[in-house]
Length: 136
Ligand code: T46
Image 1 (cartoon, rainbow, N blue to C red):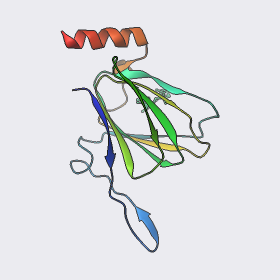
Image 2 (cartoon, rainbow, N blue to C red):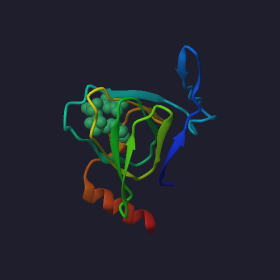
Image 3 (spheres, rainbow, N blue to C red):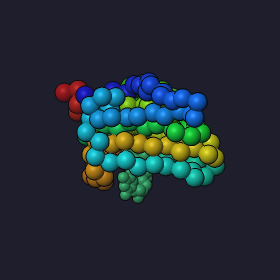
């Protein structure tokens, strides 16, 4: 299964401020085995440039903003994340790049698997070949 979509998280809160809860099996549709966050990204830096073979992730910008470029091998789309109540769910063979990080950007990612470098495809031509193989 290959897909990505923006998901809305309900903002809870009161006069003290806001709170969002993400719970496995409720608004996170996979077992969360790993959480990582990206911050202090230097000006004009672009990250990513890879696809995953078998990984589900939800990316949330909890502060600031950044843009994901998502490439299925056939279509390329840009999605700007700038609100902590939106999560970008990515599953399967999607090439991703991240850019336009604001200086205060904190990008939190929930992942369905432990870190495994062998799950990464970091070569775009190899990614396109995998997409083609998946059609056969
Ligand atoms: C993704 C996008 C959105 C680890 O040791 N453990 C980890 O869990 C992660 C995510 C990374 N690393 C190491 C591997 C590299 O030596 O941290 C270094 C930076 O990782 P990378 O260059 O892959 O970072 P990004 O920002 O290009 O990509 C990351 C995730 O790796 C990737 O899965 O989908 O964020």
